[in-house]
Image 1 (cartoon, rainbow, N blue to C red):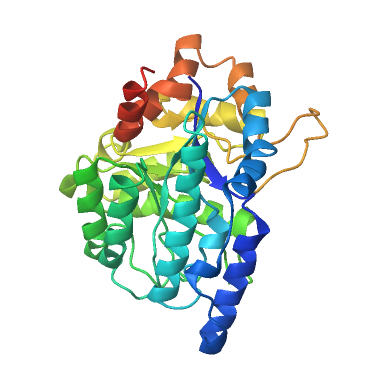
Image 2: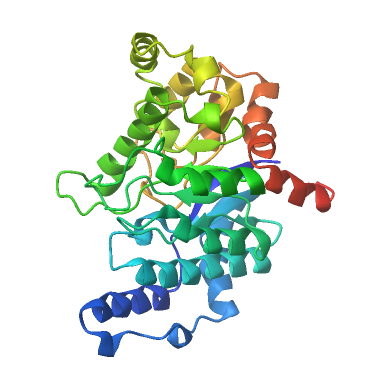
Amino acid sequence: MIIDIHGHYTTAPKALEDWRNRQIAGIKDPSVMPKVSELKISDDELRASIIENQLKKMQERGSDLTVFSPRASFMAHHIGDFNVSSTWAAICNELCYRVSQLFPDNFIGAAMLPQSPGVDPKTCIPELEKCVKEYGFVAINLNPDPSGGHWTSPPLTDRQWYPIYEKMVELQIPAMIHVSTSCNACFHTTGAHYLNADTTAFMQCVAGDLFKDFPELKFVIPHGGGAVPYHWGRFRGLAQEMKKPLLEDHVLNNIFFDTCVYHQPGIDLLNTVIPVDNVLFASEMIGAVRGIDPRTGFYYDDTKRYIEASTILTPAEKQQIYEGNARRVYPRLDAALKAKGK
């Protein structure tokens, strides 16, 4: 199988965005706050939004299954309070669940959490548990910066995050470390804030000792790890100065990187520097970079082409990236597939 572990519902029917805009307006004027029941999206609308978009491209590009979560830039945890985030997360997660039920062979869910700046992360646990236990989701997206580009939360190694980690280990789910929209004009959302966050999250883990407390905890750092592979020597050297173990022992049993890197040299660098065991196939298709590369004539986010063209990876290593690593890092995904005889 070819498993894409990084998909977002970027093509949801417009009714979702319209409802969200009303919710945002309702923060200032409670009289216009919409009810959840006012959002009407039919199964036919969901099917149309998927068949002509994600599913069509999956079939064209040759991938089989996508781990599917709400649109990352729409999480916008900085908007409103916890109640606003809680309602919004529940709506978005339910839509991803419905997609997974309509296309059970092609999509399986990952949950957005109802995070809110300054609010104890343990408030996210009920939504997390619902998504895993009732919806069959296999992962969560964890935003290390709910403030939206101002970084007001403590690092991921801080004990305030521990209730989330305890639940992740209990339920055997990984977290993709994924920020949302930047409301800081200094940081373009997808070109800077996302990649900054990937790099920052990795360095936080290097500087701390989180995985001593949680040896079974698993993080997926998306977008190829931001600057991490390119500056691997810097991180090795910093860990050495901090008297930390070698990175292979310190973080690579727990941190993994996806292949959302949109050119061949970048993928080749990733697979030269990072061990094959720590790389998982992903495309973030119909996401941050949707255009066609004029140098190749193919979509930038058609990442399978880069893996196929790699002269660094053996066929067995390519299959490990496509499937084997995902089954190992996402135990509930592996169990769901085995239950279907896959």
